Length: 374
Image (cartoon, rainbow, N blue to C red; front, side):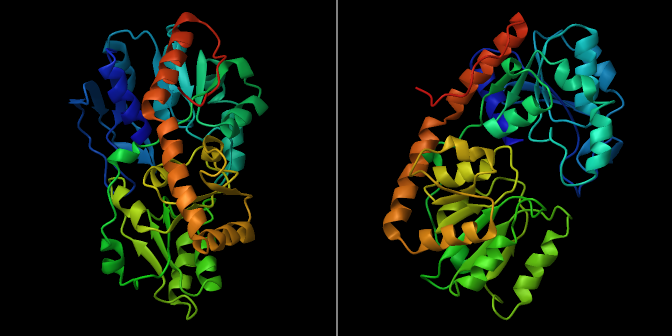
């Protein structure tokens, strides 16, 4: 997980002792290991617990209670995610032993998409104590904070920390390889999306943009989340109006940072992302960004740093058309995206995370919000 790794590495660099407890899940297709191992990663001890059972991303490591008991007692615990056995058991263990914990729901707190009724039942019973028992809650946007407050979590315990953007100076330069590999003609606009091909991401808006703009090539890079969205993409690949102009790249385990500078515009048309780290990566690369106001990252951009539109098909397609048709706007967004990345650095986010840990460990409320940094 990008966010956890960025934070852990910086916390270790600042002198903190960090233990990470996780499952052996790698992805949705690789069987998890039944063997427990411990490794040092970026200066932290990572405990990969044997995971004989799983449902999608939910791993069930039977030895988790034993490992928690045998770790050095922490000053504070950071619980990532919601509605899974690891976070539920760990939070219950912390409450039983009066160890303060920071809960970060990772955009999962509001029940949506699949099995909403079942989620609501479980949230009011099995998972009820996870948020209410947390000393503080870390959120990545005002959208996510509002979801928690609407569920009755006191606003004073919710910290809007945000996520960091990559360093623009560390982003790769364009090579032209994407056009060469996909046979995209020189001068044909490239519209890029990176992320899960899933319900709620509104990926289907982009083939519609290719239908309206007859020279545009759409490139989608990410795994099929098996929501059925991929069928709409495949239909566009076979449609005579868009055949040869809708491309799906094989899923890669590593962040596809080299893709961003190859695109003329990056689009995150999500109807409900708590943040949207891929838009941060695109902005840091200097690629103009179009994002909906339902993606939490929209609040991290200032005027002129990204095009923020309503969660609407015509609004998204219209924004893409406007960006592709205006070279001055593209240059402004390119420079603006890099400015947003410098302001929202991972060092600044780590400062806020440390503050949240101190508040949790001392029993103080999380009364701060994300700022624009130094």
